[in-house]
Length: 261
Figure 1 (tube, rainbow, N blue to C red):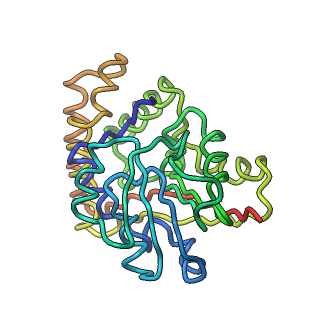
Figure 2: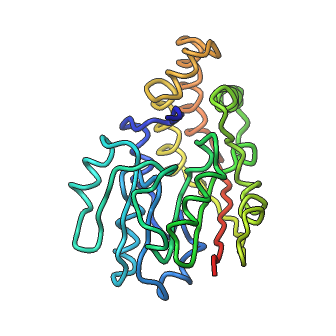
């Protein structure tokens, strides 16, 4: 099992729970009225999973994640007649062939060693569509420039390399799915744009905590890429950046919708 660089600590889930269909899968909005079932792969706390049905009540949605702990709260908070959750690996989905109209994964492929294998498995259980979106860390940018945030990014890239995963996979997604025989591919870009002071403080304070308490911190120290003292300095840099005049932070995402038939 791969190391999940972010982890599911509360500082991470604070951000993940804010995800919904409109901000995390906008490239699917025109599609969802015309289908009936969705499999949400790597669903985490289930906020997107549940919002599929909140936004499109005719849908039936199943969320799958390999971490049974994060699914405990997902099931308690989000399970309904049309939303359910199951423990399972994206490498071996607990689903029959061609059992969902749409198979969706958000911010999953950047965290795995073999994204082709996962896409192939998503294609297996899809009747018609597969969709996935990932950030591209090298394409992220912020203002004002901040040495601590630059060092945060450097360490993140090094952690990913050591774990043989690709944090910059977003730009490579179209080529990946086309190489696997998708009939029709639509490519979209969108951003998580933190542009107000309130948004930047929410984002910056969450990352200030994540730098110290999430798997990022554990991996940085385990791999001898950083020290506790440096991580505390980076944590403080996040707080200072978030409160700087004119602060913005843009997370660039690439979304791909592929037709199987």
